[in-house]
Length: 88
Image (cartoon, rainbow, N blue to C red; front, side, top):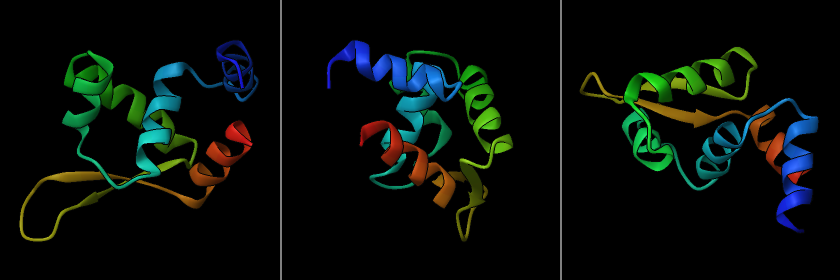
């Protein structure tokens, strides 16, 4: 798939590139919001904005790590399905 085709598939699903990168990276394992700030080259608040919008759409969920106050972002089944559709 060419970069243009990927961009079109992402846009058809009303996602931005940053949101897609978050979803794609979560297919590997849950991550902390600070990871996405670094990945996207943005502030933590900006990363949380992307994460919150994905959570509102049912694509990700926030879970507290056991034993501390840190939050991990997890991909939901709906988020996994969306990544498969884009990459398929």
